[in-house]
Image (tube, rainbow, N blue to C red):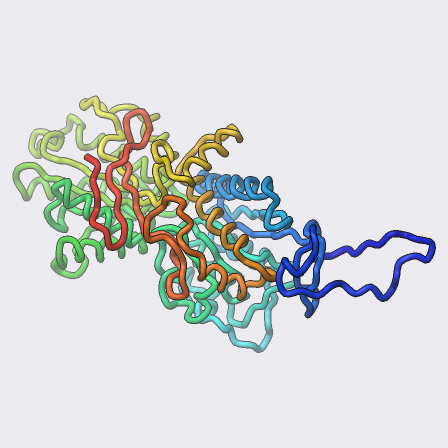
Length: 494
């Protein structure tokens, strides 16, 4: 950071041998001063000369722009709220935002720019995730990377699994904190891919595996009896894999091992290409027709959707239209009366955008039921429309004052930023990645209202383990359906 030292222009002029006061923590400095690293020394500087710049890469253009727009909005709400309170002991929070359009290579470029990544020629990467071919079959770097002088202090609120898999290795390789990503993926974020470098990664939300477990318990309650009646609709990339793998494990845990390996059929669309959905709809219709033809009575099918709002909405609408169509299959299969659906989308779908799409579609022809019927979203934050916890109340006040439309994605951004800010407030010395790691690991449950088991520790870098199931109503609102948390029996509200 640039620091300007000023002195009064007296007759004798400014002294040329001025030495700033050294320090260890902010309390060592006087009013309006904070302790920051300058060169190799920690010195007292004016807080106004030491803003805290945090980076974010997310999509605010392209097919899935609503996801990044919401996450960015939530973070900005939290930053503005804290800055109005005086920042972090006088330091203002600044967001350096870059649009990646939900494109992995753009996300990697943004991560390099935000960390001011410097290539260390002839030096091997220190983190195995850097040279591993975990996405696009290409390592992010074959040499070590170092943080440059213009690096942000952390990357916050990355959006998406395929984008995260290109950005997170850059962050940890450069020794930059990667905090509160908007993805529940296991690879890199929640496994040993990064080895010792995983210390720089902090998750706030529950994982996709946990959402899948809650979803499978929901399916069981709704009458799904075996693996042939479970369908995965997912994105054809690492995001879809994360959801599907979680679903397979959840089925094993809840229902028992499916014959022949996973056994669960999946239909996959192409990222950022909603025109790829109709072919998957046709394949799903064929599967369902065979299922109805080979069984008798009512058939309840659980559809777990690891998707985004455009593709997910198209899939639901098309399947409903097929179910109630007056075609040749209706008389032979009795689709309208025998087939029961339970759709469950993971939180990344963009719940509000999905709701808007289904409500706009109206009602199913020949059935007069809304497209929203039996559509659930497994949320990783409480229901902002009905919850009274501290974090939700604060969020609703801020979003109303801004005149913006509330939503689950912006609430997740706000929650992630609130936890991040709590760590900054608890931190006492100069802000370095390694010292921040220690501070975050000591951060307890902040009583925000996002689960009784919340908090970080040296061996736990995931703050929340809770999932809230919400069903979309005909008017687009969200009704609480269940609450699930690791180690606690699922609670249904209907």
